[in-house]
Length: 228
Image (cartoon, rainbow, N blue to C red; front, top):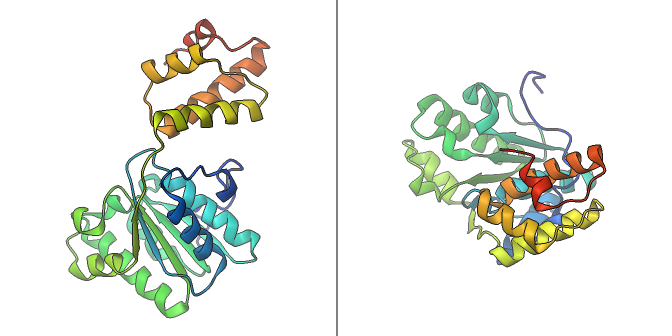
């Protein structure tokens, strides 16, 4: 593996299949679990808006694969400096999770690199798991053969948790950290901050650090004082 590629090899502890709250996405969770552990499982393409859990599932799939004794790589295309180089250097693992496929649309070299990676993985017997904001035909990819390859995967559209489920998840994650988030704090977060789960969990991390540092109870004034 090229050491310069930003492939995530240590999976954040909170991004595990056991920690994924499926809501309406129980089938997606089950198929990702199969792909991580079973060599003959179908390849997957997960579509979904920001906060629908697609990155969580991709990272969790890699962690589950490694726990099962299979090598894995996670490549978040939106976070790499050279997408084409990253795709050409990726491979050699039993499971590859390619996030943010949207990034390659309209970039011929990157589209060709992903097409070549797809074919290499098929030849090598590796498993591919893709994620993007929309189905393959709606991404604006100009390479027809790549669109057809992506569309040949089992496609699932992830649905974000509703507000009640997100509130329950935040309370549960806070309790795991020894924090209590009352309804007033949750109301403030849901009215003053973006409501997608990723942003809310980032705020929980921020609140936890500040609470530990100050040894103060979490209240609305305390959270408000953390700023933007």
